[in-house]
Image (cartoon, rainbow, N blue to C red; front, side, top):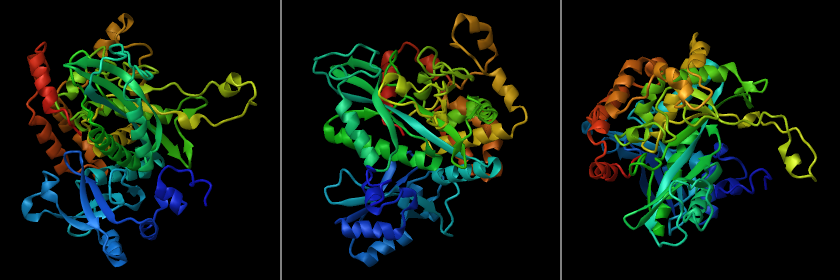
Amino acid sequence: MNRETHLNPNGLVAFVGKPCSEFTKEDIIRYVSENGIRMVNFMYPAGDGRLKTLNFVINDLEHLNSILTCGERVDGSSLFRFIEADSSDLYVIPKFRTAFLDPFAEIPTLSMLCSFFNKDGDFLESSPEYTLKKACRVFREVTGMEFQAMGELEYYVIAPDDGMFPATDQKGYHESAPYAKFNDFRTKCMAYIAQAGGRIKYGHSEVGNFTLGGMVYEQNEIEFLPVYAEEAADQLMVAKWIIRNLAYRSGYDVTFAPKITAGKAGSGLHIHMRLMKDGRSMMLDGGVLSSVARKAIAGMMRLAPSITAFGNTNPMSYFRLVPHQEAPTNICWGDRNRSVLVRVPLGWVTGVDMCAAANPMEHEERYDTTQKQTVEMRSSDGSADLYLLLAGLAVACRHGIESEDALELAEKTYVDVNIHSDENKDRLLMLEQLPDSCEASAGCLERQRHVYEQYGVFSPSMIDGMINSLCGYADANLRRDIDGNEPAMLKLVKKYFHCG
């Protein structure tokens, strides 16, 4: 048994004895044969952002080999609005590295995410998953670095209020039981996600908690570890599927919606990024943020108005992006600052062995903490198309690294204290604002589309489809029109409650 894999929570990794990135068809067949697996599920993200499922009963080894080798046909017009019904057949082909044992299936079932291929056997050019693959490939070719990412998945759990140990309104951050009611639910979600291959960093209760109409609403967060961006999107897709399924079986409701009532904390999907080369982080230089990291941030500053088109895809997204709600409104960045669009989190750059300081029996050691440094985009939320959001961020970081004026732009958009403080009033007037509606985001995407289409990453038809979809909400004045109208607000919340 490989000592590096036998403790891995993913049963396939432990069984096969190698990381999931190295899984082969032979590994999958051996696991199925020796572990009593009776069914295989293909799962794939459609245009609505949800995972779809195709079930197979395993008849024999020849049938299993055929499924894994050839995949299956699906109706693309029912999955993506840009595909016409008269030429809609697509292939779905499983990605072996994503294989996991379905934790909810009564019959032993192995599930895998799939890629889409067209009639000629080529990747479907306009599929979100392939767009991310192209974005990462171009990033690597242009910069010589790997684009890694991870998400902070925020969500609300909703259940009847039993009145016992009431939480303090909007003070739920890292709360313990019994004031936090759903810690056990969250840790079970984390265990299932890890068993499905998700690389989890930690989980905790979040700020938002309140009671409304006899129900308790509690916000939670599960944060992941940085991995290659393609894997990060896959892991987040599976995680949302697991959280929803476990909530359904537990009698709870769950939402990833960006806003579920006025005056309470909304849920974001913050994305952390780091740049790697030959296994080394390129984020720091001499203990401070490197020039390449600052150039990447500049790229996000420049493309921030259009990134909302991928990361904030329904009208409720823009009810979250308002001042004083720990959500950004201005296009700026800073260190350890939660009012900015891109935050540079506190890094382990002190040079002090705090473990030894806290534990007198420990000897000081030199641990490489540079790998921990990331930068965090804070505008996106649970309505995001995960693959297109990460593709857009990869494009933005690459664009910054390529731009001659990137360091100058990074300096102009940096703020070192709360952007809404009195001392920053004049600075605030100079900063560009994020869009305030889906329609405004569509306009920004139209103006900046050439950057996303460069190198053939985003297809023109995909950009056209996104612009049309966003404009279809006709929400240019929505925030102003329903300001103070709570019934109208709750009607919108209900309409977009299960997004992404």
